[in-house]
Image 1: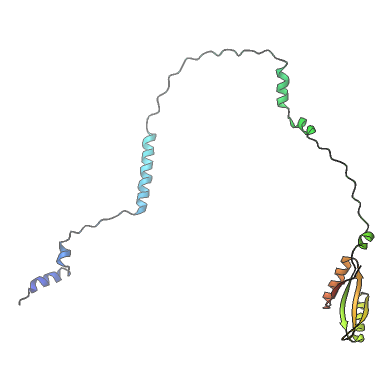
Image 2 (image 1 turned 180 degrees about the vertical axis):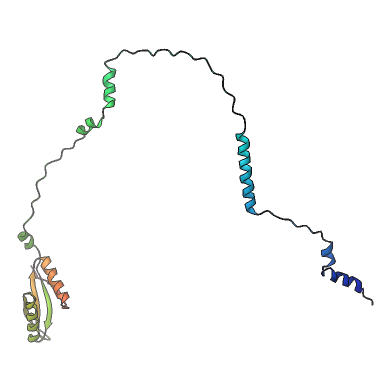
Length: 199
């Protein structure tokens, strides 16, 4: 079997292109960038505007002869027309406001109730600030509370588990004083129990 080495070497000299690629026509299509279309549109628009603006002016219309104006007819003053014009010029709300006035029934003055009668209907509260089995512990807390300006008392009660000595402050009818006492106990880290007294 014989080989044709001449054709092979000539193909290699041309850059190794296959015969199919060599026979194909070389056509390169070059596209314009998008911004060039924008510039083209602006230039075209200016050109059209210049072409339209350079046209001749519209033809002038023929002038008509001046017609003398007739004098306006003088209307004699009428007494019935004058008051209506004056009524229209005036503001109507001056007349409307008195017609829309509303009269109200008299109301008695508010009478505030005195504080004493107000406090009579309020419930009484006491604050229990401690409960001890030993009376000495209860008396120690009472002494501490007296130095702070409170008026504590000890209430001893007998239960099945023994005698309990409860330290209490109060009674309070005024809610403000009760809140102040609760705040003072919270500042001293003393837990207080609010007890409502029966009326």
